[in-house]
Structure formats: structure tokens, C-alpha cells
Figure (cartoon, rainbow, N blue to C red):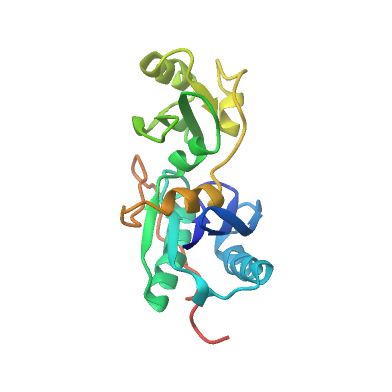
Length: 214
């Protein structure tokens, strides 16, 4: 089964195409606030790398956050447009779950910058079972609070963790479309954004449908 992954919860936007768990192609960008402009070119780049077309995709998996309000809306809109036009399933995958899946450890604590003096935090075991639901916590106490609930041995995963008190041992990383696609191959959740707090933003101007004639 070919699964197209889309992840836009952080400053990095990424697209990946997997075939039965094997990465056929992936592309990403790190241009700040540029998901709306960069996502469609990334999509075309991935299909060109794989020498396939969107009609060869069987399922779309989209990162649903928590994360950037604007980024999530852009990524989800693109995924839904593809699914509707192609008549294939579109599923949502938690962005922190995807981040944790890329790491290691029996207990994994995934963290993502939430701005406003907070970080998004969630905990998972090695099989991906949720141990701590995604939530926004104050930056200064996030790691101590989360490890207090999950245990001191919880492995910290995420670039932002290295900036926080108690995060010296953290692994880096941001959510990536490859892991959204991997988890999305068996996911069933609807592609609805999970903000973990009030969005505090207005709806962005979304990109045109990728199915419109060029």
C-alpha cells in the first residue's frame, strides 16, 4: 500500500511517499511561515523522485498536531483535497506521536515548541501507546512535570527540549512526513486538527487544490 504523508505542524514542512513501509521519496523545507507556498512544489518533487503520480497513492496521512495553527490547516486542506479528488482515505496522525515514533526508548516524551512561553508535550511507549495525552505546558517546568508523570527515564525527543531546563540529554528532531505515513498506514482517526489549546489565530489563505488543471 502506498501512503502519502504530509506534516506541517512545525517550521519544517515535509512530504513523503512510502510503499509498504519503504520510503520511495521524501522532500522538506524549513522556510518560516512558507507552508502554503512550498507544500505543492514538495508534493510534485516527491512524485517526480518516485516516478509516480498522485493516482498511484492508496491513502493519505496528515499530521494533525498539535502545532502551528496555520501550518496544520494548510497540510490538512491539501490532504483532504487529494483524498476527495482521488477517492482514497485520508487519516490523521498525531504530530507528537510521529515525532516519538522516530526516536527510541521504552518511554518517549515528545516535545514541540508551542510559543507563548509553552511547549506541546505528549508521552508514548515503544509500541506507540499514548501514555500522556498531548497538552501545552509552561517551558520552565514542562520536562520536570512530564517526567514526574512518566518517570525520570523517559527519553526526551524534540529540538525544543534542548532549550529547556532538564533537557541536556534530549534527542533532537521535528515531526516528519515519513513517520506520519508509517503510522498512517494503520491509522483510522479523522484528519481533524488537534490544537491542544485555543488556536489564537485566524484562518489562513489556503493553497489551491492540487487536483485543479495547471
